[in-house]
Image (cartoon, helix red, strand yellow):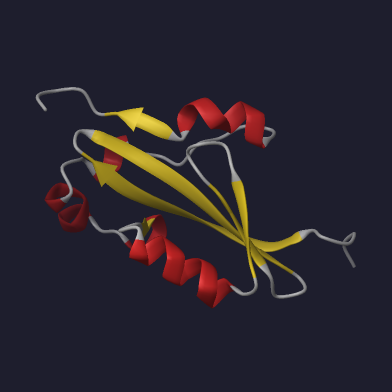
Length: 105
């Protein structure tokens, strides 16, 4: 059994803003609550995974794992060139949460 508060699982979500990708990480806790780490460095708490997912969808985010190459191209990027942020902690990932794709605006 893991320690209290450990995430049961996490998912990466993204949105496009012009020629930029904005990442968000959804973590679901063992207790069933959820939290979203956003590109502003905030961690937002939700009472359930469904509530967190609804908030992300309302903000025009899509689940990274659910994207295919065509979905990515419609949003203006090549899926093969985009990966979720990595790092040992949120502070290390924070600079990777907003990514410029370059090119024309």
